[in-house]
Amino acid sequence: MFPRSGLVSVLLMVLQWSGPGLASPLRPICDPRVLDRFIKEARDVESAVRSCKEGCGMVESLTVPLTSVDFSLWEKTEVGERSREVQAGLWLLAQALRRARASLSDAALCGLIDTCISNIHSIGQVIRSLSMEQNIPPPTATGASGTQTWQVTSLAELFRIHTNFLRGKVRLLLSDAPACQSS
Image (cartoon, rainbow, N blue to C red; front, side, top):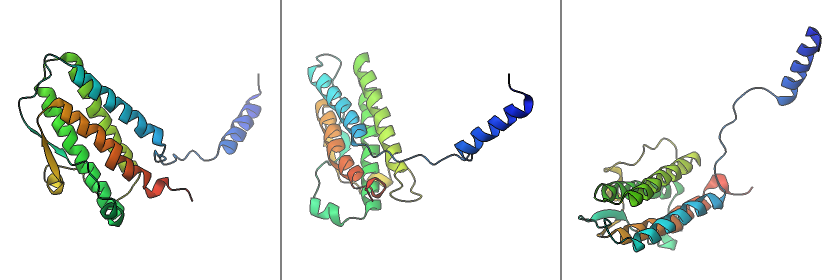
């Protein structure tokens, strides 16, 4: 056993060596493998939907973001505006997925949709952690109204759009994030 003064000395040395106990800010998630994992899961759901035979139909048309990108316009657009566009698109996708889930009876597919919604939320958190723009509220129906949209009438279309949006605009935004650029 250490004498009391020796224990205090050891503790002080360890605390001094480890530095002050200040919390460090979260580092932005810049590893492309994170998004690759979300894309893989989206593709898996897309495949599951294509193979679904019963309880997989939709009864209404759903609004989703356009996935096409005009690269010359994208490059001229400020990062904050790109971020708003992607976040509005993610919001639209989450809303469409929630509405699609409500019309399904297949429990396994509902679970997959819940995972997609959770992943969209996580991607939104990643985008916010990159601080591409300051003090923007989360997208709402009003905020998403300026976003170019498309109507889909099948789950297969919905999940194709979901996968393409992640592979396109979300990947472009994250790959161009200033916080992820090497100095």
